[in-house]
Each structure stands twice: as structure tokens, then as C-alpha cells.
Length: 576
Ligand SMILES: Cc1cc2nc3c(=O)[nH]c(=O)nc-3n(C[C@H](O)[C@H](O)[C@H](O)COP(=O)(O)OP(=O)(O)OC[C@H]3O[C@@H](n4cnc5c(N)ncnc54)[C@H](O)[C@@H]3O)c2cc1C
Image 1: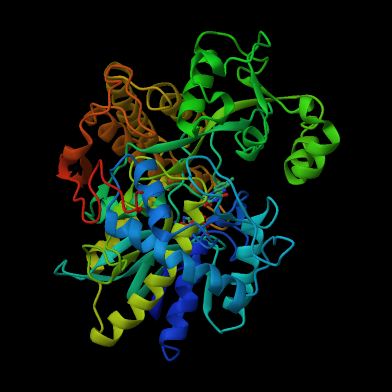
Image 2: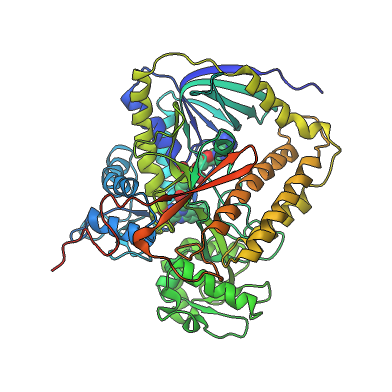
């Protein structure tokens, strides 16, 4: 069957991804310049995919009396172990205030309230003030539903089930000309020429055996950025959430997050011998930060003190099953769907890869090193440093998504000229993406399983040089295997095997970068723990790791952190 011919479209602003970053960018661009054509291209269906929809806990913002943006900033910088770009972090905490008012007053989100009518803000780990705005434990659905309605009502174009595969430059390489995609519905290639493009595909560490992000995420944006020669930073920083549901093999529910509030409310973690083990690792017991609890659980697992499926248990029953069912309705129902009694029994849990702090190097106005390309949300690096506070993820995507929309509109006023794409680059990319159809068909499942195991065992919660070197060799071999495996069915329409192949291609490329950066960072901080270098180096001389894909592999440099607002040992808070 011959594939559909290459289609060509043109738009002023092209937005890749429809999470918090993508949808906010679309709305702001439309508000700033209603005369511009705006197109949102997304791998899934607009409003139904990505991780913003999955946000449970909530949104960090300094609103309440007694809190301040300075306090939110200090929590963010200290949580990030002083690796963050401070101008990005400052933009996050200050613009979050404006963004939450926009969400409530302009977009119509309802968040939980106190009896006096003020917005309820709950506690989240690692913060010195209760500042997490939420709607029960289903905050993301409220945000994405309202954003999607607003986008639908404004005549913004949609390319749903369109997978971006290549950032295409002009022939002289000086700027971005557009994006090549696959229309997943018929499998044809589509080139979208655009004046400005937002990379908002949301990262997503789905290369780990246990992971939380939505299935549509496979680090495509980061892989495209690497191929386009862009720099990525902090890629060694992968956050594990300590309590992913362990529902056994054969269910996609395994890895799904059981929220932090369970431990915050007094839940106990028990190993396979029914011992409450956290006392062995941290005085704060189950209320220690995510990284510490993840490492503690992993250590119990490695020592063989596991539950039947190889994890540990979370137990809430001592708090009273009726109370637990009231307080954590969503969690209790989700566990019940999988056959577990969270309120009154034991539920097996395991650390699960949750969030990538690293990503494309970008500036506070969301510009990147490639003129015409903007970036926002989980595809970017630098906001969170070595660790992200729970609640700062959705703030990050909505804050910078909105800024990107404003910036793209302003940029197009200054650069209205059309840019012509490098046709040879389009042809090359199509040939590379079609290559699997010309190869002998094979089974992708063993490659996926091997990738899961490699990243979990050697680039996971606890790392050392031997494991990371082993991982790099395993990843090289896996890449070689993948490049030999073909896709049997040449019918391109909704060809899920082809898309699985492409997912693995992106994931292996980004995994190699994570392992390279993790081997290079010879100290432990935040989410990155080296058993052979357990110390944290001097904070005042901190540097961050920048990677680029070169012709001969991954090139790596170190850049000193610029403490533009506060240096280690100082604070922005008034001290009495
Ligand atoms: C279970 C869970 C719970 C969470 N809870 C919280 C919380 O309580 N508080 C918090 O602050 N953060 C939380 N987070 C993190 C938060 O969801 C993310 O940080 C944030 O929402 C990411 O927004 P984004 O717009 O960058 O990406 P996403 O919302 O993930 O959107 C990415 C979009 O890109 C699309 N896409 C992907 N690849 C392509 C491609 N090749 N071409 C076109 N489109 C593509 C996807 O389909 C999707 O539409 C949670 C995450 C998970 C997984």
C-alpha cells in the first residue's frame, strides 16, 4: 500500500503539545495577536492527553497571608539544591500568582476553598508554607478541561493525532522553518511551515520500568531538540515518586502515583517482613522528602525485604478506614478499581519515575538558541535544578506556556518574514522515519523490556560509575538492535507498531543522554544519588551539566551556576 503524499500546511504559530504549556501558549498568543493563525498539533486528542490532566496534588503559588514569593523562591532554590537558573525560578514564583488568578477569574477553574472563602492551600513536602492550590485530588482535570474549552471556543486550529518528528531548519541552518509530522490517522507525512514554534511535548521519563507519565509521552521533544543540535541541561536529574502503585505485571496501572498526601497524613510504609522501616533511614520517617523515601524503599527492595510483587506496602488503616476514604476519595477508588483496599488494607508500592527536571536550555521569555523555536513546560531544563517541589510542575508549565504565547506573538511582529525550509532535511527525515518498513520485521517487546530494566537497574534511584558505564553499553547495544528491527505491516494508518518503534527511538536517545550526564556528575544532590560519591559538593561552586548531540556522540560541558539573586548561605527572607 503506498503511503499518502506529503501534505504541506502553513500557520503563523505552531504549538506542539496540548498540556498546560501548549494550551496556555495558544490562549496567550491569541489574546496578544488575534490576527495570527495558531495551530496546536498534538500526539493525542486535545484536552485528553499529557500529564497536566493527571495532576492530582495541586499548584504551588504564594497567595496566603504570611507567605511570599520570596519564600516560594527560597523553597524552590533550596529544594533544587542550588542548581536552578535563578531568573527562571523567580519568573516561576512571581508569575504563578498572576496565572492562578487567570485560571480562576478568566478561565473559570474552581479550586477548593476555606470556610471564609479564601482559596484552600495544602501542605506539600519540602515547603515551608502550605501553598498548594487544588481541586480535591483531581486538580489537573479541572485545569485542562477549562483550558481546552477556551481553546475550542477561539477558532484555534487543531491537528490532533499528529506526531511531531523533526524540527526543520532553513537551508542555511540559521533559524527554524517548521516541523515535520506524521498524521497518525493515515500515516502520511505533513510539513507545517511556521513563523514561531513552541516545543511543549512535556518530556516524560517513560523509559523506566516503573513510571507515572501518560503513555503518549516518549521524550519526543527532547529527542527532536537533540537532533536539531540544541543544548539540554540537568538531564541526570530524574525525579522518582516513592509510592507508585504496584499492581502486578500485565496492567498499565502499575507505576501510577499514590499521592504524597497519604504519607503526609500519617500513612506507614512497611517492608515484606511487616516492619515499619523508614526509621532506619531518616528521622522524619515517612514524611521525609521524595528522594529520601524513594532511596529507602529501593534499599529495602535490594535487601530482599519485599512484598509479593517486589515492592513494599503502604498502610493507612490505623488512621481509620472511613476517614481515609473521605480524605482520599480518588486514591481509594483508584486502588479499589485494581482490587486493593487502600482505606483498610495494605497496598503494594514501588518508586516510580515521575518527572524530568532536565530539558532544553531556554530563557525566561521562552526563547531558545534556535531563532523561531520557543520552549516551555517539562521539555525545558533549569527551573527546578536538582529536584522539583511537588506542585511546581503544573505551575511551571502554565507560567511558561503563557509567557511563550506572549513572546511568540511579539517575536512574529519583529520577524514577519517567511522562512524557507531545507527540503533536503525534510526528505532525509522522511527516509529515516520510513526506514523500519524496509527492514525485516521483529519483536519490539524484548527491546522495550530491556530498556526498562537497564534504566531501572543502572540509571535509577541509586547509581554508581560501574552501573552507569554498563548502562551506556547496554543502551548502545539496544539502539543497534532497534535499528535492525523492522515493522511488518506497511499499512500506515494508526500503525501502532511503527509508533512504538518511534517511541523507543526517542526514549533510547534521551536515555543515553541521561546516563552520560549521570556518569559525569560525581556528587549526590537532589534526585541524583551516586553510591560512589554520596557527598554533595560545595554549593557555592556548583555547576550544571549541558549536553549536545554531536556527530561523534554526546558532547558534554559544565557551566557554573550564576547566583543572580541569592548565593548559598544567603536568603531573600527577612531574618529577625
Ligand atoms: C500522575 C501525575 C501526577 C502529577 N501531579 C502533579 C501535581 O500534583 N502538581 C504538579 O505541579 N505537577 C504534577 N505532575 C507533573 C505535571 O503534570 C507536569 O509537570 C506538567 O503538567 C507538564 O506539563 P506540559 O504541558 O509540559 O506537558 P503535558 O501536560 O504532559 O503535555 C504534553 C503534550 O505533548 C503531547 N506530545 C507528546 N509528544 C508529542 C509529539 N511528538 N508531537 C505532538 N505532541 C506531542 C502530548 O500528547 C501532550 O498533549 C504530575 C504528573 C503526573 C504524571
